[in-house]
Length: 108
Image 1 (cartoon, rainbow, N blue to C red):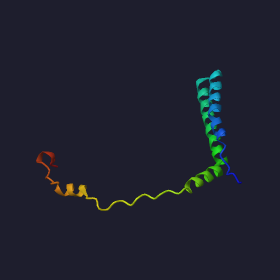
Image 2 (cartoon, rainbow, N blue to C red):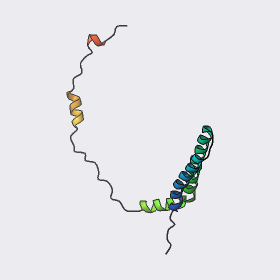
Image 3 (cartoon, rainbow, N blue to C red):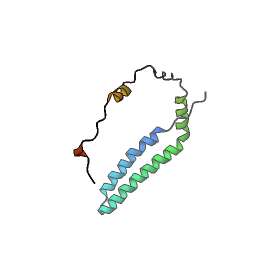
Image 4 (cartoon, one colour):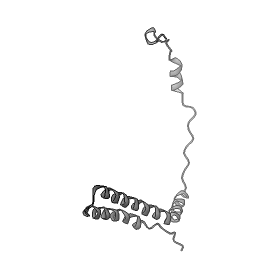
């Protein structure tokens, strides 16, 4: 019984509360406005790096899970019907083209 490895989703879900806690702590610290912005940028980039590392560490499990989903049998789509009348071409053939009016043509 070889159970297929599963991604550790709790680690991914833990990043959001961690980032929020860091942002709350950052708001409590007395700093100039530019330092607050720099700290917030650092926290967001840190969270993105953590998400990227999680994706890399669980890449194999995600690919194996996706391949298992693709192995399910799915019925092919039915072939398109070729006997439908082409209404658009009939309407295009009936349309008459009028020459431009003299008011709409500019003389150069």
